[in-house]
Image 1 (spheres, helix red, strand yellow):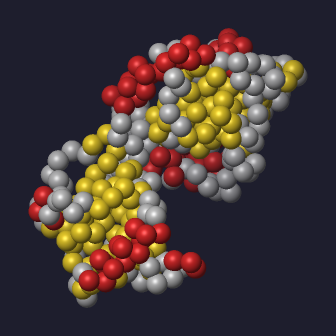
Image 2 (cartoon, rainbow, N blue to C red; image 1 turned 180 degrees about the vertical axis):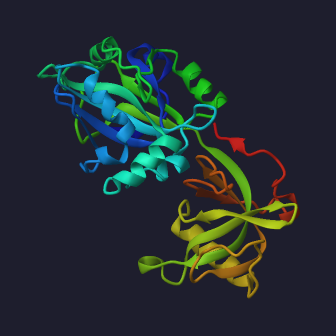
Length: 319
């Protein structure tokens, strides 16, 4: 079951919803057969058990009781927050058991469980969410590499503010009477991602393909640092057709043969421009190298000069 992007439920409906922290990891359905075995499957259906050998002990936790659980595999940083960049080193190691075992010792994962779909041979898909959560929490699944965080009923505004204050990815709102709908992106689950905005300078662009031939498919952006212009990523979404056409004309007028970034980005077919266009972008988090994750274009900032692009100011949370 998948969540639909949205906003908090209206205050008058707050008590009809439960709130869980949105996790930044790899979604997994966990199959416990009751014989000590455990199988993890990704959203695609791929068997990803071999990539996470430290989770194998989960198969013993319920004894002979079979169960199917829903959760998210995370890698955690020093503050206990999900670090997707670290998790990427663990994903895709299904066919490399020796490497997976080595990394399990240095970059261990943690499985967050948030739903139970079958238990003791009984399907729970038509059971209301609140009852499923109670069944899940009664299993006491707390261990060295897995846990069952609680859900908060009501108080959605406070829950969302808490995720922002602690630098977490966001919130998932789940209607307390909702059934589990496999494969459905349901309005009964609403996801809210905490996003931030930043001002950036455009230093280059990549040609578009298909219907975007002749126009920019993405822009290469940077922020000022003590040594010059530091590359922070490429942005390829967020424009209307008219805005993309306007941007193409501005980029052609600013063309240069010299890369304006401190270090030349790995971007084949890049066209460089003088860094005088200021834009505002929205993004989820930054990587340890300072690159923007999941950036999208918001607007040009003609009210700002390149010198006023706010590179030395903290990024802004969105409302």
